[in-house]
Length: 121
Image (cartoon, rainbow, N blue to C red; front, side, top):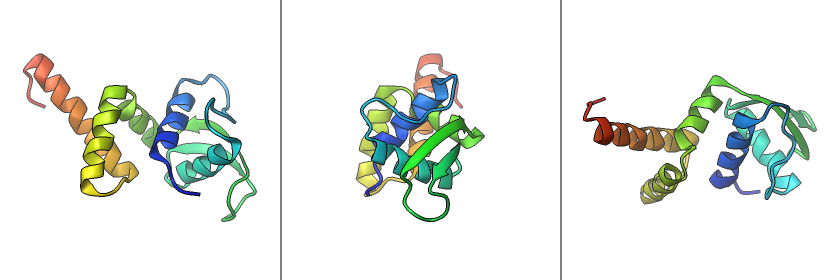
């Protein structure tokens, strides 16, 4: 299984608006959902029940909540235009990490706020 940042984003955004635990997301296979939920838990972005427990590849997952870091990530990549620019900028650097994507997205949002308000952040 290869990590897919679009799948990561879709799962995080789905959990951010859910009013109950999330065990699937439309358009994402069960296998991809479980394995990416496992990665999200390892990254500290979600609280979840991952099966089987331990270091084996997940076959099932239920996500109960986003952590503070998960909410920060969701807020930074929620806008589709910001997400597209973030992925484009990350590709120039040759790789994607959660921290890089979050920092790039925050930088783009900061620039938008500065351009709209004239207030330097």
